[in-house]
Length: 100
Image (cartoon, rainbow, N blue to C red):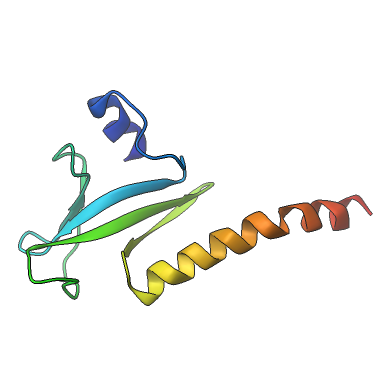
């Protein structure tokens, strides 16, 4: 999804290459980037609205071969942020332990 959006917009999506800003459209139940309508990820169920509009800000988190999508401002979003921060802080410690 990230590469398809980058090709269409002709540039970098965010300062962090592992974070892609998305929007969740409640009426059609899909995630898409603000700048381009496709690609999109459709889901079967609606999600709780974050505001009074049809759209809620969301984030695609890329982790190597895996990824997750969260609605911004939710506990899931906070968990992803904390996990990424912990991963960055512990990178050096993991390398030291591995090299022992």
